[in-house]
Length: 104
Image (cartoon, rainbow, N blue to C red; front, side, top):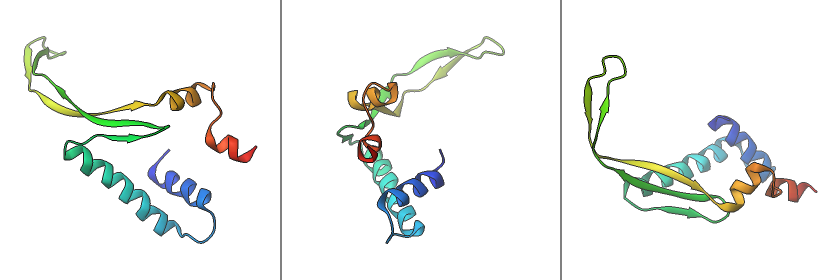
């Protein structure tokens, strides 16, 4: 699914009265808010969906796969996502998704 597909699906879920351009601005704003919060060191918890946070990776020594030479990998911060228990159940098919519940 691309960002354009996501905008299309959100616009359909909202229904008439919102243009795709407006919906794209909302999706962009949401994604930018997540990026900025993570860049500022905050974590984001969306109940029923999951948690976004930044985790620190320590420095380590790795190997160049072509030559086998050791390579120093510096410490860095990486974004991580942990899905909620409900979300994991929906992906596994154990819990009906909210879209299925509304359409039923």
